[in-house]
Length: 256
Image 1 (spheres, rainbow, N blue to C red):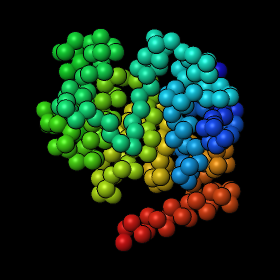
Image 2 (cartoon, helix red, strand yellow; image 1 turned 135 degrees about the vertical axis):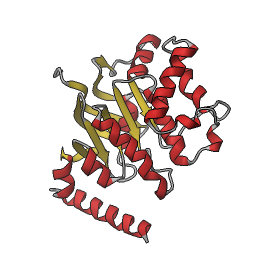
Image 3 (cartoon, rainbow, N blue to C red; image 1 turned 180 degrees about the vertical axis):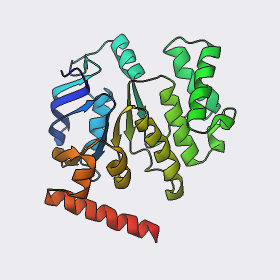
C-alpha cells in the first residue's frame, strides 16, 4: 500500500441476503485528505463507511485502514479496539448517553479504552470542547442541548480518542437547517488542520469547497470520482448531473 495511504479498498462487495449494496467498489484516502462520498439514498455510501470501521463485514474484496487488513474473517478484540481508537465515527444521530453530562460523555471512552485517569481525560475533554465552542456546556446533559450542539459534542467525543481518521455519516441530516452551519464549520476547521476525513454528505457546497476529492456512488458502484471542485462543478456523467440538479432543486425548496 502507498505509504501516504491511510485507507485503501479494492473491489469491495457487501450484500444483505439477495440485496447487493456494494458492487465492487475501489478507492483510497491519503493522509490529511478529505474524501466526500455523495449519492442518492440507498446507493451504498453509509454501508461503505460502516465497512471502513468494521461495523459491517464485507463479503468480497479488501479494505486496509491504518495498515490493518479489515478483510480478515475475524479480528481479535484487541485489533478491533485498536481500530476504533484510531478511527473516529460521527453518526447521523448523536448517540450521546442521556444520563451522563457532556464532560462524562467525552471522558468515558478515553478512561475505559485508553486507560486515562480522570484528570487526564478531563483535561483532554475540555480541550476538545473548547475546540468545538462548547466548553461552557461541560456540566449540562444532552437533553439541554440543541441538535447542532449535540452533534458538535459528538465530534468532540470522537476527537478525545485522538484518532488518525474521522468518518462522518451524514452528520447534518438530522439537524434543522439553521443548525447545519455550526457543524460544518467545525468539520471545515478539522480539515484545515489536516485531519484525514471521509464524509458521507448531501451538503454539496461543503463537499465542493472543503473536500479534496469526491466519490459519487450510484446503485452500489463508483459512477464518477475525482477532484471535488472539478467533478461537482463540471460532472461528466448524466447520472451525476441529474443528481446535482435534484439536490439544487431540493435546496431551493428548503430556502423558500
